[in-house]
Length: 152
Image (cartoon, rainbow, N blue to C red):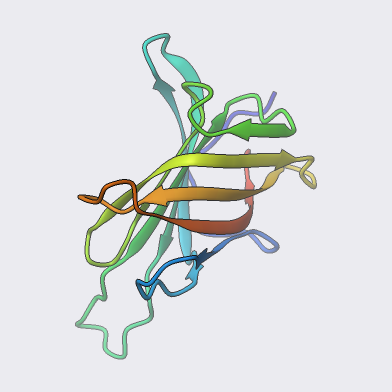
């Protein structure tokens, strides 16, 4: 098995994109401009997990100004085995979204599906219900696709 490396730029053919549905809040489509992949331990059993942090930083019109970034954090099993992984079913499967205003939305249900990747890439899609903070269970749906390098 290839080791996961930390990488902050995209190789050709790699992407992480997402769109929000069923929400009154204006959430623009997420198109990652960079990402970081790392191995971490998660849960009480210290399960080996691959954590993909995707960053969407809008282009600024000036070099002096940096616009707020948005982040998606996708945690998947470290063995990259193809299959459907329901959220909250395992310690190594989780999802969160941080919007530009620093609001963090936690995934409460849905699935992350891993597909056979091309070469040294892991490929998949997700359909996740995220909960609005400080609400009585109000959610919105985030659907997306990804393909990122898993090894160098």
